[in-house]
Image 1 (spheres, helix red, strand yellow):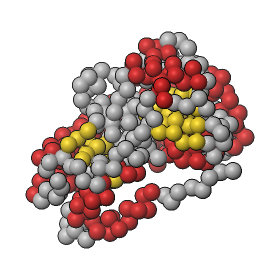
Image 2 (cartoon, rainbow, N blue to C red):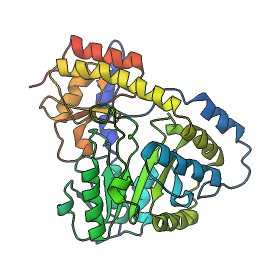
Image 3 (cartoon, rainbow, N blue to C red):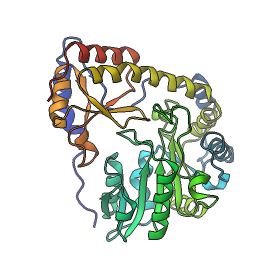
Image 4 (cartoon, rainbow, N blue to C red):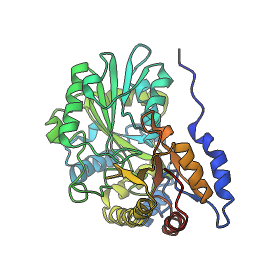
Amino acid sequence: MRQALPEYPWDAMEPYAALAAQHPEGALNLSVGSPVDPTPAAVRDALASATDAHAYPATAGSAALRESIAEWFERRRGVTVAPEAVLPTVGSKELVALLPFLLGIGAGEAVVFPTIAYPSYAMGAALVGADAVASDEPADWPEHTKLVWINSPSNPDGRVLDVDSLRAAVDRARELGAVIAGDECYAEFGWDAPWDERPIPSILDPRVVGDDHRGVLSVYSLSKQSNLAGYRAAFLAGDPDLVAQLLTVRKHAGLMLPAPVQAAMRIALADESHVAEQRARYRRRRDVLRPALQAAGFEIHGSEAGLYLWATRGVDAWEAVAQFAELGIIVGPGHFYGDVSPRHVRLALTAPDAEIAAAAARIGSAPVAGK
C-alpha cells in the first residue's frame, strides 16, 4: 500500500513570500530555479512550424529526435549511445518521480538518493511504497536497494562527482543488482576549478563504465540550458534493455512527448551557441550575488556547478528565510532538501539580471542578521 504523501513543501513558504511582498521595492524571488530568459528564436520557430501534429507522436520519439539525442551525448558528454538506447520524457521531474514505478519497484525494496537532494527522489519511493534511503556512501547502501539516484551537479548544493566517485557508485549498484540513474541536468554549468575548464563527467562516461551500460541510465533536461522548462523537454539514455523496458511501460501509460516539442528539441540539441550565451548569463549573475553574500558573512558551500548558491551563516534555515524576507528576498530553506542541511538556504541564479543586482544591493546595504 502506498504510504501517505507529505504536504507539498513549497506551500510552507507562503508566509515568507507575503512578508517579502511588503518590501517597499517589491519582492525578489530567488527561491525557485525556473528560467526567465528567452527561449531561443530558432527553437520557437521549430515548434511553430511543427504544429500540424494531427497524429499521435511515438512514445519512443521520432527517429530524427533519437538520432539528435545520441549525437548530442557524443558531442557534449563524451558518451556513445545508440539511438535505440535513448528515450524522450515529459520533462525530467515526471521521470524522477515515476522511475520506481516504471521499474516495478515496490514495498520491501529501497530507493537510494543523496543526503542533500531534490525531494522528488524520496517522493518517487513514497509513490510505490518503497523505502527511501538518503545516503552518500555506497558501502552503506542496503542490500534491498533496487534503484540508486546520483545527482551531479547537485541540486541544491552544486556538488560535482568526479570519475572515481561515479565509478564507485556504479560498482556498488551493480553489486546490489540495482539500477543506477544519474540526474545530470546542470552539467553545462561548471563554475569552479576544475569544472570551469573541464567537462563535468557523465555516469555513462567510458572512464566510469567502459563500454558497458548495463544497469545505468543518464537523465537530462533542456529546461535549464535552453530555457525550455515550459516545453517539458527531457530524455534519458543508457542500458538498451532498461530503455526498452521503460519504453514498454510508458507506451501503456500514454507518456508521449508532443510532436512539436520533439521538433523543437532537435534544434536546441544541435545549437551550442545559445547554451554558451545562457552559461554566460548565469556566470554574470553568480559573480554579482556570491560576493554580496560573502561580504554579509555567509559561507558558500559546494556551489561549484549548477544554478544555485548554497549558503549559511550558522542559523536555522527558517530563521535565515525570515531574515531574507525582511529584505524582500525569497530564498529556499535547506530543510526542503534533507535532514543534514538545516542551516543552509538555496538562492537561485535564474532571476533576471536586474533582480540579482537588486538582491545583492539589499544584502549589502542591510546585511542579514545572523550569528
